[in-house]
Structures are given as C-alpha cells and as structure tokens.
Length: 616
Image 1 (tube, rainbow, N blue to C red):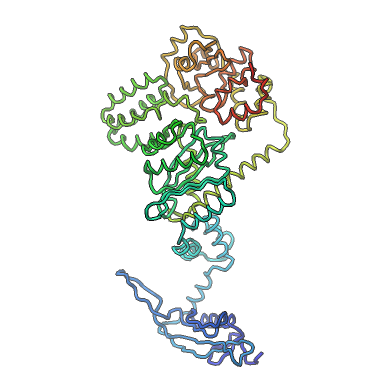
Image 2 (cartoon, helix red, strand yellow; image 1 turned 135 degrees about the vertical axis):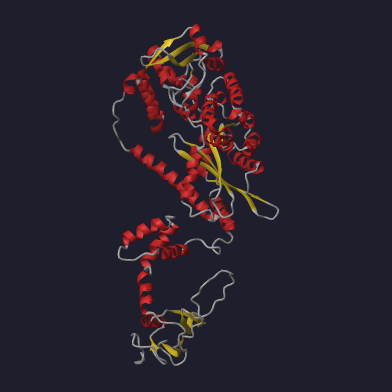
C-alpha cells in the first residue's frame, strides 16, 4: 500500500490519495459538513463496473428554471464548488483514488448549524426500513407511522414533512405502474396454467383496451356451487387509478361467515357490462343463484332478468331507504318522518291486497311523492315483504355483507390511485384471511371438549343428537337457542273461526322472532287447504293473543308464519313448542320435512342421514 494513502479527515487538497471510492465518498461528505455545506455526486466515467472518474459538486450547484407562473424557489444556485477525483488504471495496483482538482469557491453563505440540524433529524437506515415495511405491507398512513416511530425511537426528532417525503419514496410511481393491466393479466394466466380450475375471463374493446375482467379461484368456484342459495352483489368505485368499477359477489357459508364468491372489474355499470359478467359466471359454474340481493340499479335488474333467468332478485332495503332520503326528504319537508313511518308499514304488509291498498293511500296522503313512488311501485316484487317473504335469504334484507367486504378492501388501500396489481393483491389477501379463519375454526373443533348441559339436551334428546352430528357449530348454536326459547311459548289448536279472525292482522313492525312474516291466509294458500292436517296457534308467555301459526301438513312437513325455516334455514321455536305438546319429535328430520330447508343446508344433511331415519 502506498504510504501516502490517507483515510482520515485531515484536510482536502489536490493530490490527496484515498484508499477506495467508498472512503472517498465518505471523506468528502464529512469534510463538507464540517465546513457548513453538503455535496452531491455529479458526473461519473466507468470502464465496465470500475469507476475511473467522478465529480463532486455543492448541493447548491447546477441551475433550474421554473416553467410555472407561480412564485417558486430553488436551492440550485449554480454554486461553482467542485472536486474531481480519479482512479487511474495505470501505475495504481491498489486502485487508490486521487483528488485531481478542487474549486473551493461558493456563491452562498455556509452554515454549520443548519447542516448539523439536518443530520440530526435525518432518518437512520433502520428507521427507513421500518417506514418501508409500514408503508408497503401495513398500508399505514402518516399519523399511524408517526406514533409508531415516536414510540420506538423516542430520542429521534420526527418532522411531518420528512415523514411524508419518506413514505412517498415507497409508494407506487408512474414508472412502476406502467403495463399494469398486462402484469395483472400475466399473473392470472400463470395461476390458470398451474391450476386449470381457475376462472379468468376478459373483455376488450376495439382499441384492445381491457374493459371487463372476471376471475375466480378454485375455492371460490366450489363455494359458488355449494352456497349460492343467496348471493349479494354490489359495485364500488374509487378502488383503482383507472376508475374501473369493482363488482363483488358475496354470500355466507354453513357457519354464517362471509364468503367472497367472485370479483370483477368493469369499465362501466351498464346493462351490457353486468350481462357479460353474469354470463361468464354461469359458464364457469353452471349454477344460477336462487336469490340475488342488489342495490336496485335498473341496469343490474335488466341483466339479472336476461341472464339469471332462474334467479329471484331482491332489492337492498338500505339502498331503498337512502334513495327515499335523496329524492323525497326535501319535497316532503316536515312531513317526511311521518311518510317514512307509513312507508315502512306499507312495505312490511304481509298480504298483497293490504300492500296495494296502503301504497295507494300513501300516494293519496303525500301527493308530492307520487311521481317517485309510482316508479318504485314498478319493482314492488323485489322489495315488498308480501312478495319476498317466502325466499331464503339467511335473514338478510340488505347488502350489508358485501358493503363490509368493500370497506375491508378500501381500508387496506392507500387511495383511489392504486394499480390493478395492488388491488388484486389486497383482494387475495382478503381471501387468504378467509381461509385462515376456516382453518382456525377446524382446528378449534378438533380439540376434545365437554359441552355444558343445556335445556335442549333433555327436552329433545334425539333431535339434539342428530343436530350435533350434522349441523355446523354456528348453525347448531342458533338451532339450540330456538329449542330453548320454545319453553316460553304456549301452543293450542285453533278452529275455523280463529283463523278467520286472525286474517285481519296482516302487518309486521320489526324483523325479530316475534314478528309475523306471513298471514294465515298466505300459509293456507301456499300449503293448499286439502294438504293441511292441523293448525296451531302460538302464544307468548301469559298473553292470550296468538302471535304465530304453525300449519302441520299431511306429508309430515310444516310451515310457520315466522318463515324462519324458509328464510334462514332454522327450525323455529314455535314449531318446537308444538312438537313438545304433540309428541312426535321424530318428524323434524324426516325426508319430506327437509324440503323446508334451503338447498345449501339440506343437501349435506340428506346425503349423510341413513334412509331409514327419514322414510315414512
């Protein structure tokens, strides 16, 4: 090693020799800070991977001309300070670095305190790694990251502008977002190549621009086939930089947990886009949903009618209410709250004749709403309880399940300007989380345990054993609750006069176990009078007023005015009270009675119960 080589911070002068480029960079940086200014690397000349020449200039070097008409400022002041260094190839066996030229002049004041303050507040390498992780993986914003960093690095001053700039470094840029759709498409194609069960469908316009994209994992296809009794669809915006609408299909499984069935990106919300989407789902699964809950968009209704020909559409109660607020609150003024109460009473009418009479009265009492209500009346089959009560929805009357899924996705996004690849990544993280919950539930069930004795265990021993054998824990809990609650009811046979009198009470106020969902006339009409064996009236506690009717049929099936077996797939407390008195518990799981359960629940039960259990 040449004895003239220096690696200390003694001084900067022409002819100074440093051991290598790393030491040279560090020396010049530290020397400049000690003088009250900063340096940046300028021009560099390389031979292959070896640096032969490099220039260092003052951070106030170079010049900048703003094209903006606003008042701007820049620290680029054409400062002349410069250092040239080289690493000669000849006569330099140790690859030392030589300082060749120094222009030690500035056109600005030097400030050692300002440089020291900048170094003091500079984030360390460890802090920058934390910021990168929190930004890219945890999707944390400035406020949350500030609290985290201040807690972990209590002695380090943190300034908001510096944190903003650091976070921005790790967010996607225009360059990283180039060919975004192509990258996403390639990733999906790779998944389908590995597993042909993946569903990937695309739509393109005349300019070869992506307009529609649907994808489903193999697990999602299986879930759709098994659990599509009730599907909830909703479209959300502001999830990607291309302003493509994100359409999600959500349902629930045998544990009443949310399932994401499918996801799609659409260029618009036209009837043609929805029809394209529905057609490709049918091509992939071969299954029409039994019921689909939507946000009452006319384009979706038209697409459902055209493609999902075997599906019954139901409009989300929440969206209907929001549209009422939007369209009628101002015209009705002080009358709006009374109107809303009357509208709900009309909507909840159980008899279609009563619904029509109350709707006509609604228009008569609130003439300012006539135009809007007449339009709403055209889709009455999709939202009035007198039409929708006999459909299985798992107790759902709104699209809240899909709205919660939308909220989970948006919560993980930086903003509405993210890439399609990142949006897809967040959706699949949600699917992974869904799988983790299922695996955790399976592990929990595998742990041996002893259940506490419940009323249902001694009230309906055989029924409880059968339920425990075939029902999932979530459904079993709901079913046992209905059995336990049956103790607080009384049942009695009713005569013809009681039935005639009861037909006058044909509305419900709340969605609860005490809420009648069908009139006795409707039950008789659905069952057929010749098929009825007995009709039981159900009273609550000490009340002598009949709250519900249980109709026992000659084929050993039943139907209750609460419609719980039809709408939720759970045998209700009212029927168990009749069973307790009538003493034929074994009818619960006979084959014909399974017809009152939705396909997604009855299919698994019927396939495993021995034939002798439900044969007549």
